[in-house]
Length: 92
Image (cartoon, rainbow, N blue to C red):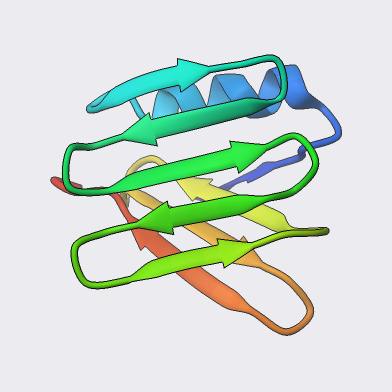
């Protein structure tokens, strides 16, 4: 089941994203978190910038977003009024 990550509750968002990134390296700053899985990465800022990168594609979105994390499925979904994007964690 997916968990909704609210960026306006930054501490809880970081905790949830840190849990999602446990199979990789997680680094944080005051207002950002980066999950690095070797060949893939996710970076989220408190202001709503989400960027991902993998060998064959990149994604970037800035502004109001809704993030859904499904730990069991290994997915992080970004939803906006006009965009739906799913990042699949390498290795599940």
